[in-house]
Image (cartoon, rainbow, N blue to C red; front, side, top):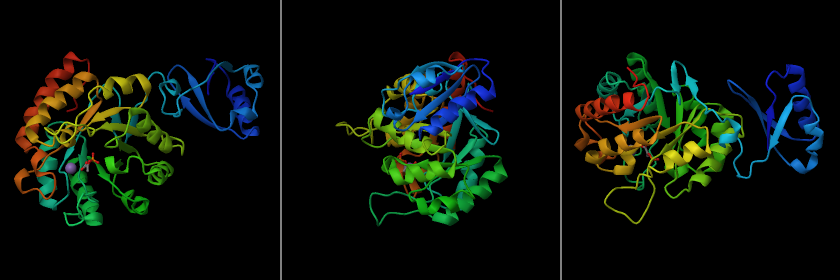
Length: 339
Ligand code: PEP
Ligand code: MN
């Protein structure tokens, strides 16, 4: 259930609602929008009769939420939720461009990519340090050293850092070095990890599980939000279908569906969906045309020598061409391309 608060309600009147909820063992999550304050109520509602809420002077209406996710639902923040990480806003009119290599391999490699993508509007540097590889014999990432490299390079180039973690044991260390944690497709329903990043309060890019429905994915977001961390962007990165021509099938439809169901910003990863560099520009254009709030793209100085995902990484030149197209499109779509 959500409680829509009357415009102009005083702090004391809102407090009265919160006290009522607390007395009945319910948890309140407050969303203060530009026009409306909304209170998301979590817990066993049978403990409280709706009448005792409806009589309170600050209550405009009570809206039941049928979905299993509540805080992630559009009703909690009808006007959409953007959030800031330092000087970068995710989910506003400006598109968010995140780019970098699949894996951090060396400081020189990351530096070359960072300079190239920063010059094309990227604000967030990606790079895998803890790599969730299908084979235990494949390159597993530089781990802590990888995060340190990302931080140094990002600071030199005025970028923020996003990197994946695969275990809750790494949150404390990673939080010293990254601005945003990526939860990868393989951990999209690792509920303990989701709750732990929720508790950490660090902004999260939550990838869609390889076979996760949109409602299940929003359930994953709810795990993070229910711990009080609302700084989440969802990342569509392709799902497994019967089609084998691409690595995964980019579900472009997920973008408008998510815009209907949730207030959370939507980022698209065309690289892991395509699996082949030459398809990445078309999928990027499709994602932005469908209403995505940004892209996360893999770029490597010399893709054919990459230690992971060699086939799908773009060269810096290819990335530049792609971003020129996205920049041109953004004006038509009423979006702002970042400089
Ligand atoms: C990645 O971003 O490098 C990655 C492993 O992505 P995903 O979890 O989407 O496969
Ligand atoms: Mn990758």
